[in-house]
Amino acid sequence: MDTARFTEIAIDCFGSLAQPTRLQAMRLLLSCHPDAMAAGEIARRCEVPHNTMSNHLSILARAGLIAAEKDGRGVNYRAEPEGVRGLIDFLVRDCCQGRPELCDLPQPAHAAAAEQPTDAILAPAFNVLFLCTRNSARSIMAEALLEKIGKGRFRAYSAGSDPAEAPMQQVLDRLSRLGHGVGHLRSKSLDEFLRPEAPRMDFVIALCDAPQGQFCPDLGVNFVTGAWPVPDPAAFTGSDTERTTLLNELYAMIRRRLEIFVSLPFASLDRIAIKARLDEIGDTARVSP
Image 1 (cartoon, rainbow, N blue to C red):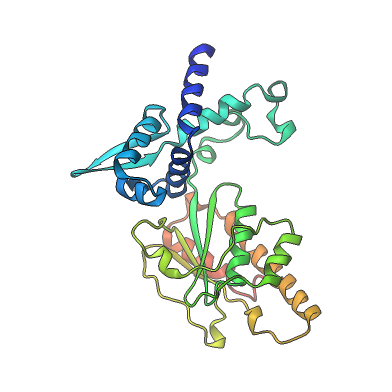
Image 2 (image 1 turned 90 degrees about the horizontal axis):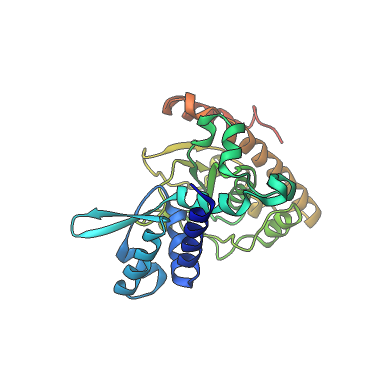
């Protein structure tokens, strides 16, 4: 494709995103990819009338950023990641004299393809839900950690069967000091992930300390599950110094487990083998802080 035509397409894409509702819709569809979302649900989430949302979605579709799919009498929309990647590629192609790594920007697709095996480029992103009772400490830590070490291959979520009003402040403070963004972290009910519009999970990992009698919900067999029991810091009654030590130990334990998890050869393992590996990772005797 010649430069002039590429520039024309990029301008069209940027123009389609240069409006608050369309940008919100684009981010919404990217967050649930590869699943599609009904036009009416997008309108509801963006809080705009259905006919107004249809016009916005048409503009995004013409720019090649989303695709429409007929579903009976309705229309669903799905994000088109290749369109987004092309836009990013256009922005960084000439950065730093063709060396975007100098400013820590993603390499253009043509450069990355030359350096990575095909299966790595096409590897899907996995949705991972971490569960504990209150969703205030353990699962919050796991969500923040996987966001950081997942390197784009994993999307992290967390929830609780009986969620607290907010995460433990000591946990947020500790994560912040360790370099994690915490502004988006909140305690959530498992019910949020049982709704039709919720992202589909590939893995559900329970962090409940089962021997203490805590409850972890049974989510069935639609995804690969794992049990990684860790102590609940909310139940700890020691001094502030001792609690900080405990949080550091929990952080190290969860991080070690996640480092093993993200390095698993998912492409070469079947569901049963992955389940077995998850259970091995959760064995505290095998994975120490």
